[in-house]
Length: 266
Ligand SMILES: [Zn+2]
Image (cartoon, rainbow, N blue to C red):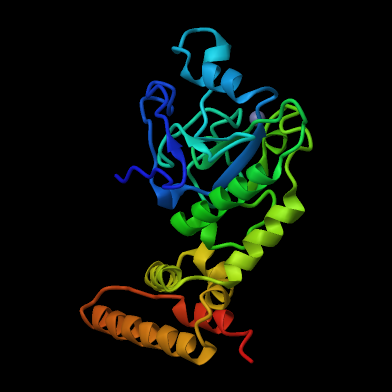
């Protein structure tokens, strides 16, 4: 189990008992499906006071989130991205084939909103950097383009609250993330290639839906991507033939998948 702290944040660990459900405090980065941007409805000091307060029966103490973005200075991180915090108002589930999302698979980010009820340039910069980092670190987030209600959430889209009260400048954030999406580093491309290989190996529906996007995002030349996919299919077919020859039943829908994945060819 990794323990991921963003290098550009101040690390200020929060109470470890304000995590998880049913005694399970953590998840993997591969389980993270997105993030929720919140407003503190107050000052940084007040929000941190609440976060650090010992856990009691008082609902006021029963809240936790991963990161805060103050008016001044870099963000503060209280919990590793793998920690399951209590910020979204619902747990959601760990499955990826349902629309249920919540604390189990989302990262929580609070923004200091008082006294202006708007984000300043410092906060817009850092909240974008956090979103970029989450996209780089969490393959399931990276597998889809940045999109509202897909991998970017407001608290009030998940549960009954006014948070974040129109605080988040989504058009600016989305524009920055889309630009980043098109300009992946070599390390990012390696990760995307690994995701494509996983997709081939498991024929996972999510990856099948997103393979075209991944190929574009990784900026892998179309013919190379097709050659890589074909090589994988041939290997699987050889495997399946061997398996059938030994008496087992093994059908793999990969050929249909691949024709689906390449229909944007040209
Ligand atoms: Zn909130």
